Image (cartoon, rainbow, N blue to C red):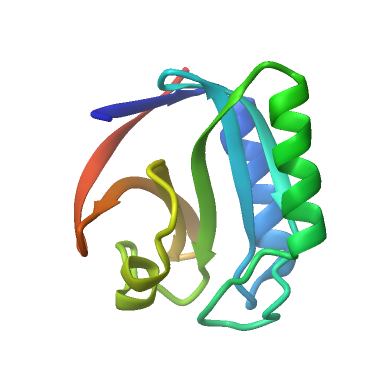
Length: 132
């Protein structure tokens, strides 16, 4: 996937979610079709860590069921790096289990910035985030 399209409101929902959990990492799922986000699903970070996220399995399963029942696909996973970096970490690469865009929100100079990445075969490429 070369790009991911999302609405400004969806980006703001992700930012509000990760900001409300900082300095801990926060996470969630992105549902939609092709490369267009239709829904942002917030999931609790069971790890309660500043440097790692583990999605609550019950919430993750419920989100997957909601995605399927609404005729959508899992197209992205988002999580925060409250203290950086603005890019994929070695843990993100090791834990990447789905062929979806990974959106990382990092706080730089007090403001949240979102970047998208495609992780495959222990490598990653940046994916353009188109906010409309």
